Length: 353
Image (cartoon, rainbow, N blue to C red; front, side, top):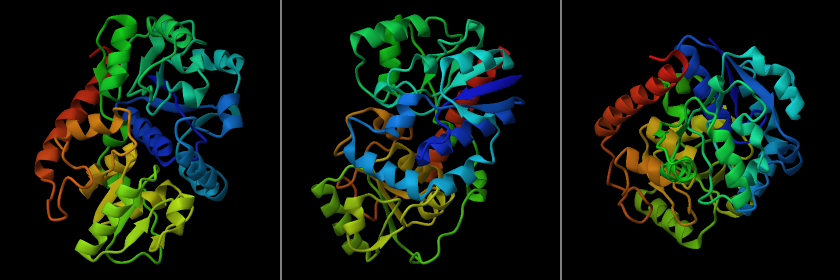
């Protein structure tokens, strides 16, 4: 089977790059020939992922877009993108739709209107063959859709062969639109083994031997205070990962603009990870880290669904003590079960098994 993935290539986002690789490799493991459709609409190209709801993240992404661009390109070279040149028109997508037996949108926030500019191509509006249309761990990234977009999305989702989403709120939105249940699956970063992610890492020189990795997009003074307290209690320095302007001014270590391979290395070698990022939390779980999550500015259900899935609802910063460890024996049992269920969704959607 030949499968085309419609997601966010050429994106200066750790999560976007890593989830793309995860889904790519998972589909290969199921015997599929895989390509990432090299599509980036004009809205996203012009806005460079500017988020109306997250100005701090905008700044971090702009820094990465210019300073860490080569690292992201090098990481993507390991995947097959088609066509080689970025396309950004619906016409171009129509021309290549027949190239694939199946089209899969996801993962990441491919259905977030604030990111895509309400682009219905991410709902395969360009493809006439409805039997090809699958979503895997797609995310709306918002709690509500406006009325006009809701109507358009409803019309397109009705044509899908199989629908899965990444979080509870996404499943609720699908139910509200279609009056039908859909499957909640693991983020594709969790579909492949820890060892493969280890093989993707690139070492960063100058890191302390032991440290707290801080990957925070939304500045909150209470969270900063909790991180300072954690550093005092443990005696560990803080390494700010990827960095925002606010984080850069803080004392301690700062990684600067890095790519996905370096990002993986920093999280994997940390003693603690403090984050408000979905993929920051996801990889902390994959790497069996002492995870502390900031929910200070999180109004979406992505992080909540992730933590609840692995019975880690209490791992919010300030709610647990540094010595409170995660029982990764329990987490790993859940991971194995959920991974098989999620791969089963893909297997059934593609092969009808």
